[in-house]
Image (cartoon, rainbow, N blue to C red; front, top):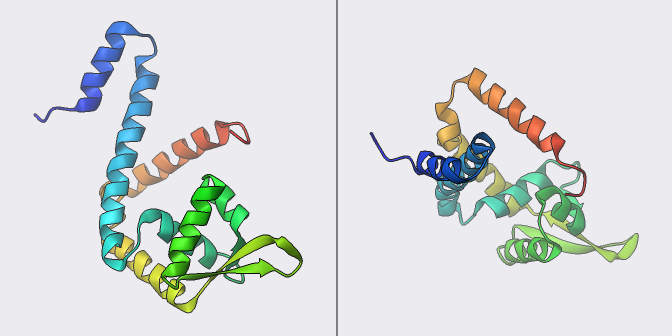
Length: 162
């Protein structure tokens, strides 16, 4: 049987501290997240995308007019403003988005999806569909729904602004 680093960490934690079950959930989620990112980015890499850049394109595609203020992107991505700016700058250099000033408020920078950006986003969707979203696809449909429900419960338990 393969060595499970999460099980080993749980044993170490349990020998020293309380709440081994909670610790195990956190470590399992962090490890699973890292492995999922690795899988998904491997599928996107041939397209010149990583998951963060793909997510920006996807979020823009979900809007009515293909654009969002950069600070709204920051909030949706749960990242720092400078990270949002970096992502937008890299996507802009690749011609996948354009940054424009908001005519209603010159202090606001709006990010707009370009036609090549929409094509890259669609290619990214097909790449992720092609791998069945990685290890998520290995779960039965009912397990995926249960997992999504459990993660939603955790997400909504986090205080606003945290």
